[in-house]
Image (cartoon, rainbow, N blue to C red):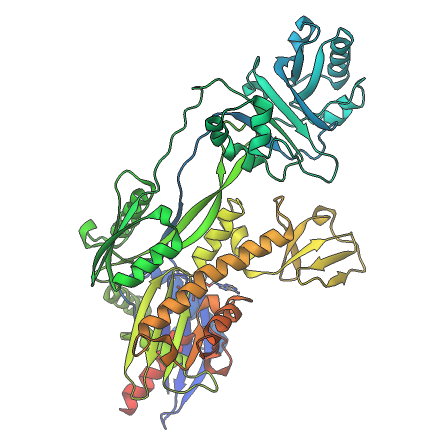
Length: 608
Ligand code: ADP
Ligand code: MG
């Protein structure tokens, strides 16, 4: 009895396929195993994950390591898809101090304009003076209201107030006139005093109108056209808020400064070309496709993109122990995005959405120390370990076990770091390519566009559907349907947007409405996977023409996604391509293609 294990070490996942070869050379698949890849693909740190995945498969089959005849590892392509990604943007810094946030309960309503004055100094204000009162931490709301009322009695025109604590409503209820009050301003000490300021609070259920409009701010502060340009980011950051404060600080207090996004130089087989990152993702990708295959990419020194590409090469060089000049960037994927950019001068952590370009870069190393892994595994397990077959070819062999497939066939392996494509012709000739950008980039885009700062949460948003908890007994799913519950839901999910994950609800701790989160999620998937599917298939197509491909099978972890396969299928349908999610061996879904191919190649070796 011959027991063979095929093991695929991916950037994210290590997968095992376990099979028995009977005397008559028929193969009987026994079990599969999966574990998170430990360490970077192709390094001995992978051993731990390999052994875990192997244990899973063996115990499912009721076998022991000593039963193994042979382990077959994939000849991993010397491409590391563990991609460094960053959003590249101009850094814009503005002139005004601003506070724009959505305290749950601002007080009063309307727009007030006046000079900022601390509560303690209010008694000294002159009659007829227009004042915005600044109420620091630790002041009782009764005292604050009393002092403001007495100033108003003296003829001081108190136009609005800015409060540190969550007291706006309590104060307004005790005032003799209705003025807008913005509360929960954490950095109240930083509010400059003696400066012209505007406070705006919208009617309940509405958003502010004046301070979210550059011309509104210009009117309030009598700005020149030149100064109005500078407040554009302030106004943009305030759009959609229920309340806001803008303080005019003296010229020169905060200097406007920009760090350029930078210029990328792409070195390709057909020459080199430069492009400014500001040109946007479409232009960058156009250039990459024009000079491809890409041999290296460099970024302009001293710019955002220069720093990013240099870091990618450094990290990869260190991890693989190769010198920096051996580290070549062999592909980049750029995607238009926007990032919540902290607005300089903001006192409550305000953000403006800035357009940016996200980049995934893939480094090609001259070799991966696969033999080392094989040697150590052989010693540890006391079993024959063989490096068998090129990853992409194995993936095709595995994909062909999907019921209903036949040669010629193309596959798209949508993993975490890279999107790989391979094609096999009727006469068994194969060709494969590897492109930067896959599931991890989608996660990164979701994380940055929603300003989550939490990669695990972004990963869950990517993988699971959303719902809005509308009452304690029902939720509305993102497709509009309603689900009722006999028992009341936990109070912490009430009125929140939640992720429906494995029967539980995870509330998303952000203010974004469901529609926005869904939009960001779907756009990120489209921009990465539709772009890369078209790019990848065009490169492996026999004549460079994607229309000459008839059948495509989607494999890899990202093919498990509940939307990505549909999006790719739709996009490919326009080219007359039949495309669908793989179902390896009729049972594995899109997983286990490479591992299965490795097992099948054993059969081939013996038969041949
Ligand atoms: P690799 O071959 O590079 O190891 P995988 O084929 O394991 O990569 O794919 C990893 C990617 O698949 C990750 O980006 C992960 O988020 C994604 N992924 C895994 N499971 C799912 C799922 N159920 N839905 C959507 N994406 C998934
Ligand atoms: Mg893979």
